Length: 206
Image (cartoon, rainbow, N blue to C red):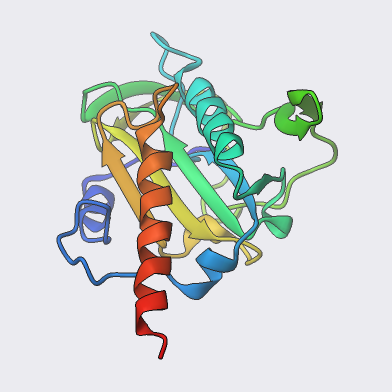
């Protein structure tokens, strides 16, 4: 299900604390440090770019691979079992884009670790909704105009709650090529933020 982007949504996004904030004392909530499972999804507001139809799927796959390489989290396929939900969106350098909305971003497979490395496993069953399905009735595939950041977007939400993407995000990172492999800078910055939070908390202990 896709919902069109509007100017006020972009303005609200600019008010959310991000990795670019200069407040060095900002720390992540304790439940982020305790999190061990994560679900990576494509931003449900994002349609398919006819010129680059697989861009968001590739970005999601690259983020998942980087998270597995990090080794802190286990990937899951449902928000109900995910401690954190990460929404990704590939930017193409434009703030206004003509895309195809109403096309499901569900994925048939997921990366999974194994003794021999990383393999792809099948997703089974129907996923728990990550947004309120009654907020925007499905209308099928349709052309739409998206207004949003021209850069890649990596947004972290709390999992194991109803409609996690309808809640305020915990942390976000927007930057050009932030989701590109093999480095995937967004994951690197998230890792640094977690490590900085752990460092600050350890310094506060008597």
